[in-house]
Image (cartoon, rainbow, N blue to C red; front, side, top):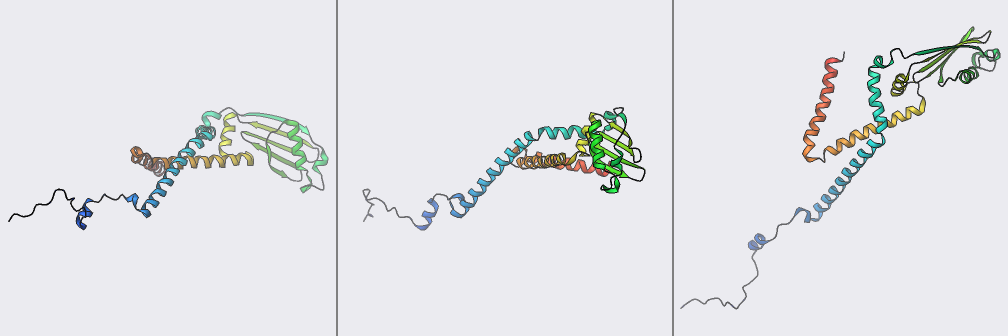
Length: 242
């Protein structure tokens, strides 16, 4: 007897066994898993946001601080080689005059000398454009010192007669720029500007460092260049700095 042939008109059974079901099932992506998908999505979102803000800050902070960065770069050179630029630039002018003797024997003032009134008179009379940095008073005379960027004025006032000798020294434009770089005798407002410039420089450097991690083709070479720069500075310090 011949075995019965399956009827071609009958639809074969579509039910699959466990092994066949696993083999034919579509692969499941990691992002399709609820927990992992949520973490991965949040990471990618904040990673893109970090790259965006790093690029934005790096670009606009560089533009905003361009002038002050250029200023400190150029004056770093003039400061390091001050003798190249300031030799023979000093100009000295001397003045003589008298102040009211009563200002030198004011009982209500400290040490009997009204230093503030004398300083105001000298500034107004001789166009001194620097603040009073120091004053010394003894029994015979009073000394006042005015200092500003690239500028100084020293006055000696006789307490008996009220006569004074004033010496004004101007050291030239490069000395002014160098003192601004150092923040010497520049006042509180310029000190704030120096602090702001330091913060800008730090942010520009850090955002630039952050961006290198998003440049896949240049990441390794960029980090190597950073390490080489740090190492070079250390070698120069260790070998050539006394």
